[in-house]
Length: 191
Ligand code: ZN
Image 1 (cartoon, rainbow, N blue to C red):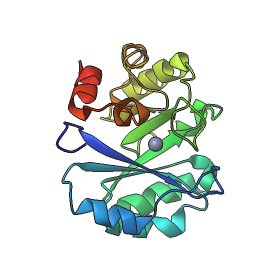
Image 2 (cartoon, helix red, strand yellow):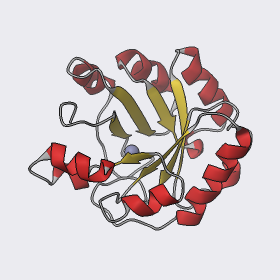
Image 3 (cartoon, rainbow, N blue to C red):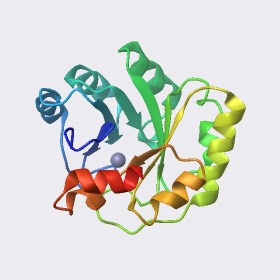
Image 4 (cartoon, protein in one colour):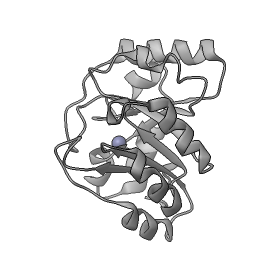
């Protein structure tokens, strides 16, 4: 993926509790850190989240993104991520309201809009285009450089729709991994 031209390496961390699947921990992040200098965009779908921030920060994450439902104090979690010199992101599930961002936008570096319910790859895109557009407007009003990332069901058909509505970072799993030629699949999305 590094050689094939990905800008970020997005790493989905699931705990079998906050989401119904179990994936990888800091040890694996540390291992893949050795083979890529790309930005590691670590998406934590775990609860509680605070006890694991240090581990992922030290394993080599560049951006640490969490779900506000993962703990009672999202602002404190942002502060904790930043205390390790990392960028902080907030991820919104399809049913999570945008208002949760109100007092966090001045502090964060990335908003991740989930366009599937988190837990599995290969799910069908939920067209939350109004939500993406509204968040883009709020980021504009805030005046800070905040990535607007979309995760879930992104492929060559859905990418133009989310970009038109203000997304500037796209997460693609199945759309890349199912292809034989990763470079061509990434290039198709970039185009
Ligand atoms: Zn993700």
